[in-house]
Length: 385
Image 1 (cartoon, rainbow, N blue to C red):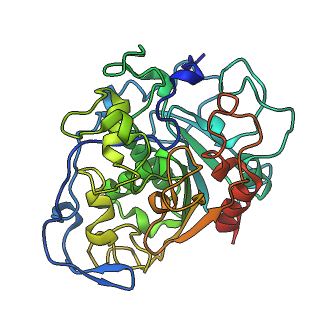
Image 2 (cartoon, one colour):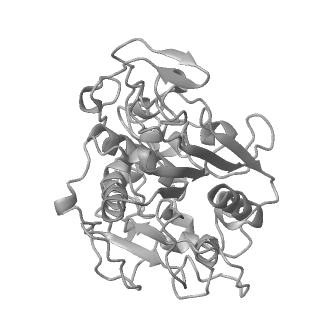
């Protein structure tokens, strides 16, 4: 069984993240054409100077979170994938014309993010309502899609869980060095095991940046993931900063919190005064030119002809700002969540999670993008079109 921090100790949840430093763009000059980066044509992804790792990732072979131990569900059996995931299979025959849907949860969380909120002994579900409103996993299965939800196992975090503001991580936040290797293996293994299927990915909060970095690394390794992706749907993502930066990072060269919680906040940057960080520079690119790889079916990270002719569809979903500089979402904002060239959708301030999920719910505005009716409708409309 998992143990969770008390609500008062939660530091980053869903959107939380950020890591130190700032990396300037290098390599060939790029021009910007209709939201698509052009240039570097014909460069091998492995040698692209604009696409370099900025952090040291956990080795999956010794990763404490790559484990199926202690799960309360039967782990999915995905050939080649050694870590934890949960399967949501359709009742009838699997339709090969429909993409397999991969779900990537937020920080300090699990596949519960995508499920009906059933009251249980864990703090995340202790205050669930009795309303059995279907969440995303149930709606995907009802529509005849096959889905898998990764489990990055925040419960197996090796950070100190004390309340010390400098050295403690009581909420068991994960940084990208923890999450990206698991999700990278997850995506790659599903694609390898299903070579004739397209894949769509839905990610929440911390999840979108994890997915984007995992895809960048797969692209760099020559796996051509974007040639297989139909939709990328990013809910409440911190693509341009998070609120926790000002508490947990402050100075990327000397984070105020030295655990994964502080690293994550530093990697993501400051929501209120965003400047590119070392981590997100290769993801966002100069002037945002890399934010939606293969949107045009050709261009990714400044390289042309690297998408297999497949145009990826991008959707972002976030609660609207109260006003400029005033935010109801606990972690991100309209500007933080939007991606250049994507269908950037905004929910209303009343589109909150009403299911009682996640500590009573502590972050009902943030979770509204995946657990309110408006958020669920936006996601399923993007997936099922």
